[in-house]
Image (tube, rainbow, N blue to C red):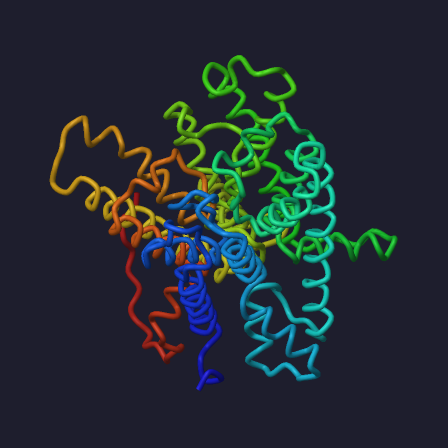
Length: 447
């Protein structure tokens, strides 16, 4: 039966099953400290946030036992790399051959073109993940050693996995704010987030070019992902430095200001760690952050959002239309109609998801009430919705105080953001391509 499922439905089903298993585990008495057992909606929210590598929480880290924290970091690792990728990798270890179905699944999450051999691809993904997380864990343990001693080892491992998977889960309720002046911790987490959000294809592309020792042109995907990432980082540095100069940055030592601006330009790209208190930020900064969260990371990565390449394609479309060009191009390459239409569909579905989530959350929180008292919290609630869709995890601090209906809305938003609105739409539609009749063409006024 499973072999008859298309990759989109298989991906959605796999995430749903792991979330269900994680919810059951976190609901057990051994997963929470005595007297702080999670309700089903709280367990489901935490499991969804972990598998969807988001980082939004409704319970502080202190409410989870060591066993509960192990469950959370395991769900993060599974969700970060991809459930199906895990299954296919271990099938390879057992000597099983990949079916055509299995190849299509891996292709949809890791690669943009055909690969001659999928075994090396999957092994490379797993080895690179473990190597990067391992190095990050060592560095973070060094950064925390003076303060925590041997406890720095599990802390380093937990935060390395959470950072590379762009999850944003931490073991302190204040995220990384207490260590915003610790260069080793802040820089290591930031670099892990960047690697995780860049995607496996660009990293493999760059590595292959370096290993061959000769100039080989990078793929268009890699160039667009790198350019989009660099552009958003620069925009983030300028934005946070200017918008927060008189608020959360005011009064901090110069070193902490520089580290905070550098770090906060990275984390809205679906990581969720914070070295500044978003509950104290200016409304303009929150709106700016929502834009960064909505765009998110790159395809084939551990991050969410509409993705950097989608934003790149849409910018190219706008430039082409403003210049009255028929061809849409990036870096001297013409983009196919399928890429352009897919980018437009992803954007529209994403906007529908986010706006729908905002409407539902505000309805659950305020009902039919109006006035300035209701309009005030709207920005914070909208911020949480965008954070959920982008699988970021940043919040102004209102998440634990929301109602069950709002939590359920955020659960569905996180799920849609992680599997992708287009993938989810395809899975729900369930209709294969059919022969279409040729219709008469007619123009329509637009804009």
